[in-house]
Length: 452
Image 1 (cartoon, rainbow, N blue to C red):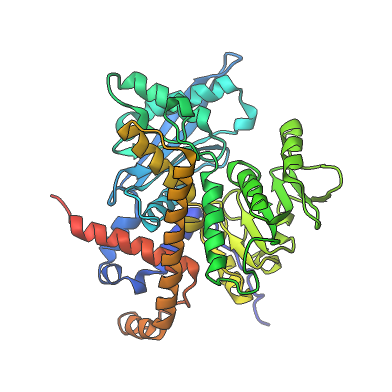
Image 2 (image 1 turned 90 degrees about the vertical axis):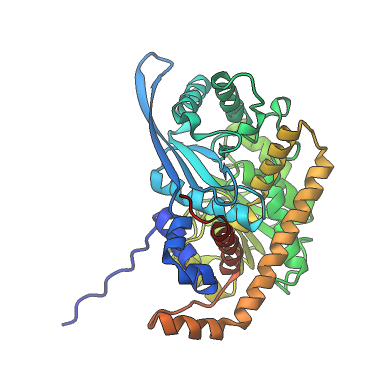
């Protein structure tokens, strides 16, 4: 009798996934292939801070929360990355997100390294006053670990411009007598925020998708005009993606939030969905739509699928049921490596997160520059600069993919000579994006050297 076949158990640890993705491109980058130590240097965090946050809640009792801030790499510039408030925040998650930020900033060629932060809290269960207290205590606890030229936070999941205003105010009280506006981005306009920043992540995703289709990335889908779109997540990125893709001529057929989703094959009226969401705190139960379970939105037949929620949404368990022609990762890490392989076999191109959702950090960089130079650019200028940056990054990824696909057999031969038995997977858009980004980081590290 043979032993029963063991079920496949997918590793969903985000830090393990980030490392796996990084290691996939080592055969393509000479500096990394020749120096395992350089690979470790670039992937492992330069600094990781864990803090305990005792907070007096509105009813008088003391509750303890846990916060994390990770600086992955400052090789190409000061750390840059958001702060999220979520009950599932963990050190492993924050480390992975910081590593992705390093690669994201390198891919779009802005002079930042990668960082990320988070507090383990359910923001839906606390008051605005309690959220302010947690934010201020977190920034005070981080102390000199953040700063305008060392590590610059920004909004993320369940944090917004108001949260950034509290960060700016707290930091300014601790560092009086200097220009503190560049310490955080995504601020309200009257505190030095940038026009175009609230919609930047979605706007960047739109520009990347437009460019990819224009360059023939999916010949049976020449443009956004008339394309059907399903969006998972109706927070900042998802909601603005719905607005912008509809404005660009696409038809939004499904959206979802944490409570569930809605579907209409003839198209949703996004303004009506917004009004319903604002009034009821969810997109669910909108008249005239079909109800979906939270993850069902990912399986809706559509031209473009936009995961805009959290990590590990498309996995080995559901990847085979994806019915899109193109997947645009507006979220960080929504697709696992096992799912990537399934999607590749199905012929579904994935516009990877470090490209597709980089619009947010690009406009954060523009805000930082405006704060340093005491300027305020108009929204048209911000959008023009963002479009140019996202088009250029998309062009670079597509041309790199063509080059590495052409040379794949040579790469495999060279790699097998020094690593017998190890296979080099066939490259995809994520591979190409990582090659560009990790290559730039490796070059910067080589130029800087190690001191002392």
